[in-house]
Length: 403
Ligand code: NAD
Image 1 (cartoon, rainbow, N blue to C red):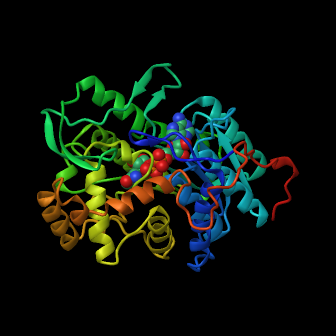
Image 2 (cartoon, helix red, strand yellow):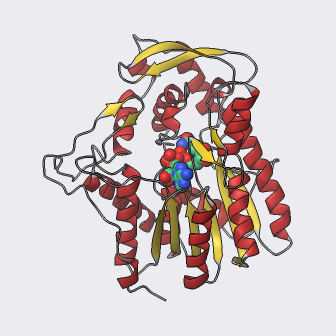
């Protein structure tokens, strides 16, 4: 089939298998050039490993530090003429590339929030590894069914307390619009914390702990975001921020618990980047496009893979203590938050309008990166060629792996 992008709102409903594989391979090639390792965790579990920060974490662990990896994600396979989701193609490409190099890789597609998924993954860890050294939790989901109560919660992206109005961008027309979001109800805040807070992360670590599957220097991390004043009302002080507060508090509590046995838990505050989840957040995409322009001009631009290389190389496995801020968080959003970067972003934000959006922001870069998430616009891929869209995962039972 010839696969073309079909964009609906902030999502592309098709994905290109060869383009996604190219995207994964480009990230692998970049990581291999960084001269990471030895050191680093050797048995790595990544929850949310098919796209964005989770995929980058799995690639850095495997191809930077030769770790065995297990990935968990929720993606759709191809069906009839409908392509699989990009995360499906990414995960297949990752597994094939890892296995081709003799690296252990197994993937689990399904609901990470469920007890059933935790049991399946724990069983595999018990049988294949005997323990885990690093758990990276990089899940971003619009909903969660609570495994104990069965209650369904939905995450909402809204301010708290009062309505919020500001500029935003409509990417179907590239026009600057004024957007007003009503404040969230208390119930919406509660449900967002339920989905994107730290409870499920804690359940994963707790399950590994009870099963005695935590490696000696077990380390776990989850990803958070802070951001500047302009996104504060809708992000950090909004519903999603309440969930991030909960995630960060979970990290502090987990860290106290794990330290007793030589383990650690961290939150890493990462940079704002275009991923499938973040493009859905109101106001944020306009901020990104401006940020991209400023950071590219200053030679500071980074994608997920660059962020995670820096996180592993210069923070987690640099030797010595892990550097953290006054709230105990690792910061790799340091370049984004540099005062010179933020003051230029602020100036462009105030200036940007329909007539100057191309000058004030990196619109072309945004559209290119957005399509890349779905495997489109990558160099070396023949988009006119017929491709097989039904791409299976490797048969793990017949794979020889390095001990
Ligand atoms: P993403 O959308 O690229 O990835 C989300 C992952 O979660 C995918 O692998 C998806 O399959 C998986 N997933 C979703 N629901 C699932 C479920 N029920 N069961 C199993 N897997 C499921 O998201 P991302 O932007 O990489 O975000 C990852 C984390 O990083 C989030 O906590 C996010 O808040 C944080 N973060 C993102 C940014 C950013 O700008 N993108 C910045 C800082 C921090």
